[in-house]
Image (cartoon, rainbow over all chains, first blue to last red; front, top):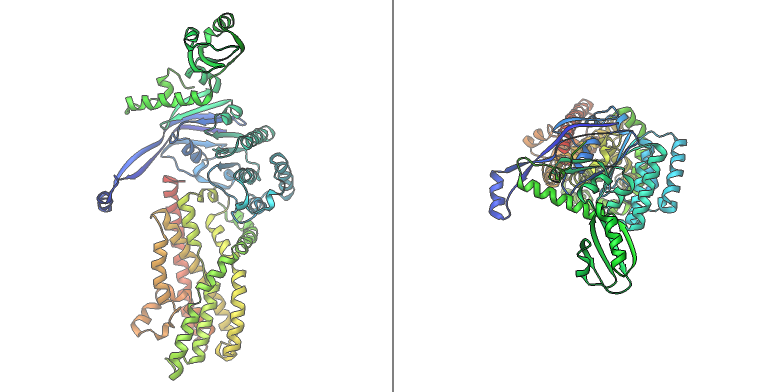
Length: 345
Length: 269
């Protein structure tokens, strides 16, 4: 469905130091710098797959999505989306895809969302019967109700995002690019959007590529993740495997019947947090059974749970390694997993 | 993007554009109030003409001229450059580019869709003009009315295309609004908006005939006030020059759009 080979996208950006003198100098001599937003990434995505793009700010995720959607022209490399070269922006291609940008809107600001839906019906040439059926489904799944009759500017952020998603799906795109679709939404609305996206994928077999800073979005929706850092592909595989490589530890949460000294816990593993009634330890996954047995035998444990480390922490560590590796060998610029011994598929 | 798909969506673009224009009715009313300069000029020039005609203009002719100017401006006005400039700068143009309809056609549709609201303002003024100056101050030649209709279409197209070109300049410069300010200076002075162009000194008058500004306002006003009722050949020659400018502006719009889009695709998205 999607094939990307050695994709590069370099920008030439104007640069100048702060200050009036620098501003005046830049009138006559402008300094430019080449920035490699995407620097030779390759991957393939099958029809119906759900893939999460992960990476720190400025890693090249959104640039990649925009190249796939035909909004940006690659500097070099090959991109094929269901048999189309996106940069040609042919009608047949545009009718198959949609890019939802969480921080940009397509809803007509002063009109009710129903007007945007109708506009999209016309421009995508959706038959009226199919439009009615699609809108019925979308209204039900997203609980749109009367929202579609209110001017978009009067809707809350979450309500607007639900309407944005509905507007984006009027033509039932086969490929859906979602760039931070849950940004700024409350927890409940994030869950609603996630549920909806998953159901859309299952119902229409749509291919889905998602970027999000909310790890829960990625963990819930994407069996496969692609990590991009400094414009390079740093990892391509399952989230579980990524977590296992970056943080092979398990997290043990202990609740005590009576207070325990922090010094008594050090022998069991790395103490992440220690409070009056609860402590958290990180333990290598190979040692979990042993440590759990010892803790239950030696400490006044009233409750114990074993879980994976939070994804946010895993990603934070991954990106920190990437920054360190990039700073160390700027010319070679390895991905963070290279620094962390990982490989790419 | 295919023209056929764009044309098919055009009625809906018009309907939605009209709904948008209605939503912005208060803003439009403010715009109308801001374009009453011809009425100020009317008061000024009729006072000047109280002691005798200026050129071919007596008080009645000035009244007809500036009321017609007001109406032509209402019908042919466009501020779409502002929307394009905004969308290029903040990136929302991307959302238009994702749709299988040409963005320039969508912008044009928004301009056409706003016309009924403008007619709502223009028609009462036309009635006032008719009552104030009588039928004799306007052409009674049906062929001239046909030429006037063509000149209105040409004037609207030049104004729209200039807006599209200046809007698309946002692809290359930090802000294209200053370019529009510069264009408007020439437009106000050389289009016949403030002074009928036939009152210009001979050299300037000759120059103005080859510039686009006069064809945005002056030609339509001159036609409807009967300036060429006895010289149809000249009317046709001027109309030909106007449509020549339409073609030039059309070619320039296409070129700036294509080049600008490459810039957008290269840098921003």
